[in-house]
Structure formats: C-alpha cells, structure tokens
Amino acid sequence: MLGPVFQALFPVVTLIVIGFAIVRRGWLRSEAIKDVSNIAFLVLAPALLFRSMATVRLGDIDFTPVGVYFCAIWVVFGLVMARHGFNKRAAVLALSTTFSNILMIGVPLVSMTFGQEGLITLFALMSVHSLIMLTMVTSLIEFADARGSTDARASGGRLARIAGFGMTLAKAARSTLLHPVPLPILCGLLYSVTGLALPSTLDKTLALIGSAFSPLALMLVGATLALNKSLGHLKTGLTLAVTKNCIHPLAMFALGSLLGLKGLGFKVMILSAALPIGANVYLYAMRYKVAEQEVTASIAASTLLALFSLTAVMLAVSHIGQ
Image (cartoon, rainbow, N blue to C red; front, side):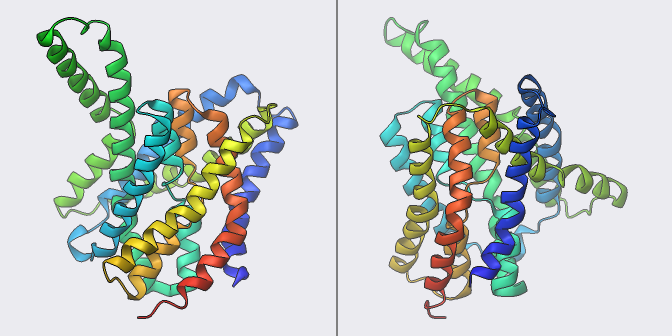
C-alpha cells in the first residue's frame, strides 16, 4: 500500500527540496521570490484554472459525494476560523486545513488505486474545488480587509454603520470578482456552459502555461523554507498539517457515514480529504502577506506526514463496503 503513496508524493517532495536547494546555493535571491510568485499567481494559475473549468461538463457528473465533501470542509474551516477569529490570517490558516493537493497528488494516487472510475469522481471534485474554495476564501479576506478600512469611517450613528457595511460589501465584491483566481474560474465556467470546445491552438497554449504552475509553486514552498530561520512557526505548521491530514478525512468519514454514503465515490472523497495541503495556499499567504511562515511549514509537514497518514487512510477505506 505504501507504493502508490510514495510514487505520488515523491515528485512533490523532490520539487520542494529543489526549491530549498536553489536558494541555499544562491541561484535564487530572496528579493526575487516575490516576483516569481507573481508569475505563478498572475499568469500560470489563471491559465490552469480557466482551462480546467472550460473543459468540464458539469451535467454529466454525480455531485452527491462532492456535496458531502464540501460539508466536511466547512465544518473544519469553521472550527479553525472560530479558533483564530474573523481576519485574514484565520482565513488563510483555515484554507490550509481544507485545501487538498488534488492535481499533483490526488490524480496519480486515485488513478493507481481506483482506476478510471475513481478518477471520474475525483474530476467531479476538481471541477468545483477551486471555484468554491478559493472564491470563498478570497471573499472572506477581501471582506475582512474592506471592513478594516471602513470601520473608522463608519464609527458614528446607525446610518453611518449601515453605510460602512454597504461600502464593505461593495469593495469586497469588486475585489473578489477582479481577483486573478476566481475570475478565470468563473470565465471558464461560463465558457463551458456554451458547450463549445476550446480551439486546439488556444487549448495547447493554456495547457503549456498551466502545467508550469504546480512545479513552480512547490519550488517556491521550498525556497521560502530555506529563508526562514525562526522555528517559532513550526508548532503551528505541524498543527495545521495534522488537522489537514487527519481531522479533515475523519470529518468526511463521519458526515458520509451519517448520511449513508457507500461505494467508490465515498472512498475517493475520503482519500481526497486526506491529501496534503495544496501549494495554492502558499500563494495566498504570499499575496496577502499573512501567515507565510506557518503556511510554508504546514505544506512541508503535511506532505511528509502524508507518507504515513495516506497509507493509513487507504488501508481504512479498503474496508468500506460498496
């Protein structure tokens, strides 16, 4: 059982190590990391997200297990937000405990474990995973930002508070809509509704650009690890990793069992919940300059912990009935 897990995780660990090494060797300077992350966040990620959404056919997919998966996400997300408060840092930490590395780890792992039938369920999750999760977190962060900037102006009477809340909503909505993550997702979804296929030249171009996102993002994780000298963030990072790798799949199992879910779709969703933290969370932390060290440590810890936690989860789901 360790074989498929190792095969799926080895490229991820390798890319993080490469990012760590290129900084320690002096091939990438600390002041350049922000520029590289901008390329990943503003160019590579939008191409990947638009193409993923533009080529999906939502009407052909059973979303029942996926719906339960998001219920489990919201349970864990809400608990983390309640612990850390309603602010940008809490939103990013909560995202790290619920956002799975589906593309780089989930696809090869599910393919090797459950075959093409399992991938269909996983692709159902992939079709809405980024759309729901990243749009939700972007909205929370932008709302928290907008609230902070309007609180001072809204400190007055009742009408002033209502006006301040309206300004907060308007600013958050605008920032969310024009954000480089939700915008390409929504554009891709709208394109998919037309039923048109992407022109082959455009499709190949987007595929080429998007394929560079995951490797670059993971190397950036390693690069940031190389720059961090403090060990104070490691405890928080490990807590986030344990929450993602262990608490998240347990919440999915509990909710699914409560609702009577069985079969392959249920197994794939439990395995998806047990996947380590996706690199997208790091880019959010970098962009908003919040919880960067904790998120970096959590991604590395979560990926290493997955060698053992994923193996345990795969053994457990093998005993779930059809």
